[in-house]
Length: 320
Image 1: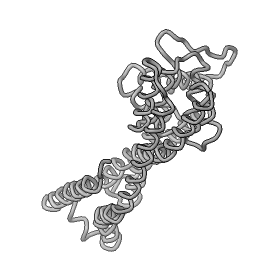
Image 2: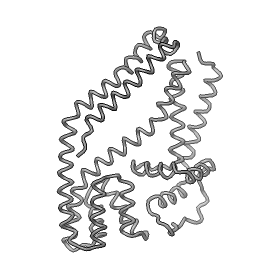
Image 3: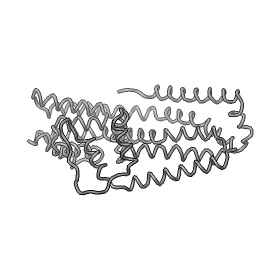
């Protein structure tokens, strides 16, 4: 059984973290906007202007955390990951959310099981929950972007044939197509308006959207700007290639969806069954974490389930 003092302390820390994160989230966004401009539209030697006369600033803890992250490699890398997921939060806010999920899942494990070891296992799952959510948003946004990219390239080629410049053609894409591709091309137009070159703005978009098809399109545009040539014809060929790849990937997803579902079911079934048995007969299931043999069986089971899941993922993940 967990001591009431430990439970009270943990709940108190969770409440403090919740209200501290809420106060930070509802604070002024003046410096946050400046940092996002630096993230999306900066280059060496260019300093973005800040708004003077704005007395409100984020909390001292968030400022200190942002400064610490800026001096580390993980800070810029995390900012890129959040940008790829299109999450309008800073790295410090993300870390506060991550800490809050760890504490909340730890408390949830204490309330449900009253066992410290299981509560710690729950907190490990809470640590990975925000990361899984970010990866899920990244993949969903990337798939939606790739599905629209073929039409965007066709529209870009037709606009160039009509006599538009490259930036005017990109602006047409931002007006005519739907998100997320319209948002990304609109950012390119805005960054060029802020003083960046076409190459820098396009490379920034590639940094936010980690797409091989987009990389191929941007490479063609940059090479054409250096050596010349008919960009519209090149884009037509690339667009046809991308549309064919998207079609094949869609067929592969349909053919492998049953296998992927089987992998998820096989992975989650032992976990769900163990939770049900724990609720029905706690004393019987307690042998898994109170004896050496139980810990060995539990460790082997977790390792084998994890390996099996990744093997299934590897089998059905067919590259095109």
